[in-house]
Amino acid sequence: MNSVILCVLGTSLGALTVASALPQYRKLAEKHEELERVLEAEKKVVAEKEDSQAALDAMREDPEYLELHAIDRLNLHRPGTTIYRIERER
Image 1 (tube, rainbow, N blue to C red):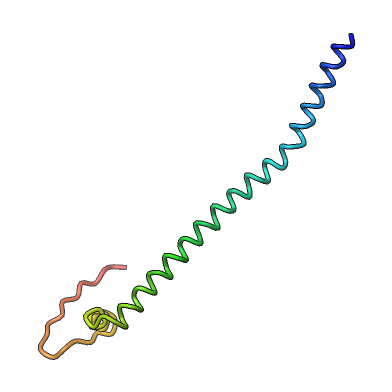
Image 2: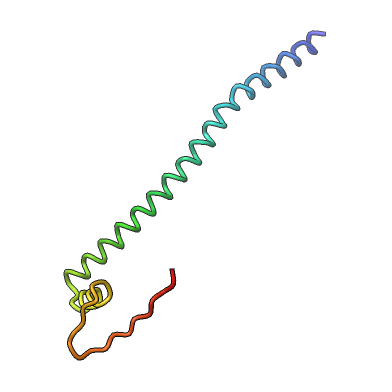
């Protein structure tokens, strides 16, 4: 009889331990998901920063890039040149 009581007591303690750990496990899973979202957002921001920095460096150091940028964005061109522009539908 004592062994049955001891077995039931051990089982109930084990179940209590598992039941008390479940909320923390759920919170941990939520925190991992939040961390993944934050890391993904950080990657996007870093990529945008690197693109902007590369464009800025090219404008400072590469005259050909600067000329192409002026033709594309500002509609500037040298006299005597022909520019063909393909517009996309929006």
